Image 1 (cartoon, rainbow, N blue to C red):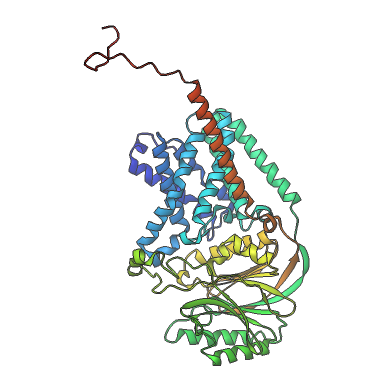
Image 2: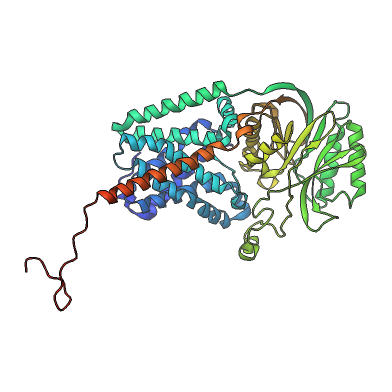
Amino acid sequence: MKLPGHWLASPWRRSVVAALAGALPMFAFPAPALWWFAYAALVPWILLVRSAPTAGRAAYDGWFGGLGYMLAVHHWLLPSLHVFTVVIAALLGALWAPWGVLVRRFLGGRPSVGRITAGLVVLPSGWLMAELVRSWQGLGGPWGMIGSSQWQVAPALRLASVGGVWLLSFLVVTVNVAVAVLVAVRESRVPAVAGLVATVAVTSAAWVWSPRPEADGRVRIAVVQPGIVDGADSIGKRFALEEALTRRLAGQDVDLVVWGESSVGYDLADRPDLAKRLATLSRTTGTDILVNVDARRSDRPGIYKSSVLVGPDGPTGDRYDKMRLVPFGEYIPARSLLGWATSVGKAAGEDRKRGTEQVVMNVGHGLRVGPMVCFESAFPDMSRHLAQDGAQVLIAQSSTSSFQHSWAPQQHASIAALRAAETGRPMVHATLTGVSAVYGPSGERVGSWLGTDASTSEVYDVPLARGVTAYVRFGDWPVHAAVLVFLVLGAVEGVGLLRRRRSAPPPHGQPARTVHESPVRPGR
């Protein structure tokens, strides 16, 4: 449906339409998980921006579309952060203002074949720049990257092993740009179709030639998910329930038991009784137990979230302290300035402390695992570094209990498929309250998800793999390529500007002046 131009002449109406258009990709993510929709979801937004009457208006269209996008993929934060969610979305949405200017620059009016061809490279690169900046942990992290909508598509997961989620984002945006040209610029359909064909050819070649993980045996890993535990002494009740669920694993020949985030609410050095109970469970099951302690530490000041390995003799000494904390949920950025957020939502009353380095743990049976906590699984570089350091299995301990009846648990569980595919290492996503999930080295689902209504322990036969993926070897090369695109663009624009200045006619000489210092008018 095409909106009349006079209706869009109102800046506020246009801004609302931009926000709604920017929100459309939300349906490509879980829970709807319409992965195919991602390849056309940006088209209405692109068509709106290209019609902007000025570059300034295109920047506003990009900004408000970015606001809609950020708010839509993070809408489940509204019950916790309330109006502050909109504030954050507006700040992050500004990252798409330059992208809006680029859309108008390359697709506006009647673009030439050269402009469209360049746009098929520049516009996806500009999108990657926005995703790169907002992926910084201090700005909230890379949750909802458009490439992560392809988590259940096997060919896309193969591409992730080549260039990570960044390559998938580039692919999705490129297709959207080409579709927008096909819809809006009839005389330029040839380069648009050529762009689609080239995209298919390049991605198909990468899919065919990318190395596949080599099978290297299997391990049995158990996930313990207690579910919601409320009421007085919920910490103690949860521990008792996790203990009972773990005892069921006796005699099942498991290689590791994993509990979710914040599964233990006390520092084990302060509670030797709990450490003893965990050691007893380890002896009962015949394997180590990876718990997650959310408590004030006895050996240093502050509250930490830590993955702690417990064996038959108690804590083994292997410990990972969470490094990347959730803004507002676990700390308040610039608390002196933004501390008021605690009065309008469920923001952290006290900042958690950060760990300093990632850890690979030896859990027995020759198995090496790399733990992450909560939304750290959204950061591609963290799982990549663990794979480089020799982790055979990636583990994310999480809890989304605050967002139990939203899309957040399913979205979080889906992210692990990308991390597994990128690294060629299986990944276990273990939660307190669901959704828990396990993926193989190619990102394929292993077993069934444990939904938000489950309170159980489940054993998974997890395939192992060896070898190094292109993404682990070369890292975020699509981002580096995007930076190079803009360096080349800047050089080309600079050379063009210099040529225009040189070819411009020389300015006329200064007019003669009278004795009263007023210029002489020609013809007078």
